[in-house]
Image (cartoon, rainbow, N blue to C red; front, top):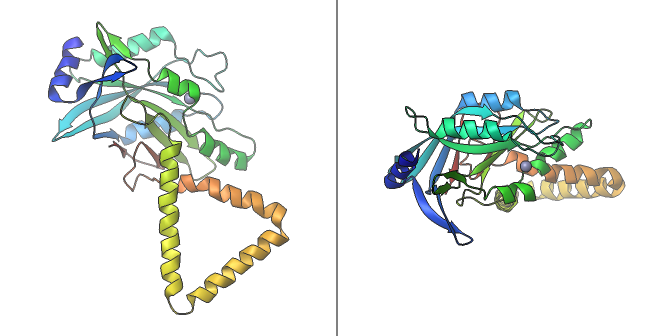
Length: 277
Ligand SMILES: [Zn+2]
């Protein structure tokens, strides 16, 4: 196991880093994480909207040029021992140790373990379920804290990125999968989501302003704005939650697997590659 990690260091896949004065091994960047459709299907099928689940994503590392690539082709689920599985995940420690050993000691395949857990989105109200999907697609304070805990092999401590997975069945069957920490990615997704929302809003606004320059389109735009204003004034009590819902849903429509997803992706079907630049 130790030789395998030292080889990865020699190949440039792992590198030494420090946090709070302690030394760790972590992945080198830029890093591309490829998740096969077998794994996205399995994560989607085993997702439960009322309780947290989790385990290990088994990833095969390679170095291509100056990039690190991880291919995730297998999931190991570990029993949740938490007394409140509806809002926390605590893997069975024996199963965890076995899964870590199995992953790191795999002589034929040479794999690295990435820990993951899911966040529940269930609500009896489908609109609240959309809100849950949007607001649960981030790390909790607890998630951020424990993500600094390394995997220890002899005198080597290694910190790998961790992953959060959640699904929304009411809204177009979307699945969110994100990677945080590992000393190479942010601890949370909100900052990056806001940047993306700003980018997509800018491109919408640019599109609208280009369109408005053509012929009589600006009158249509003014008319549409006036209609919206009248609707909000007339039905304000109803319109405000609707506008809020639309704003809350924006993150669901950006960062699809068809773009170049960074840190997290939202997918409907098939495989995906997520960049950690
Ligand atoms: Zn969590």
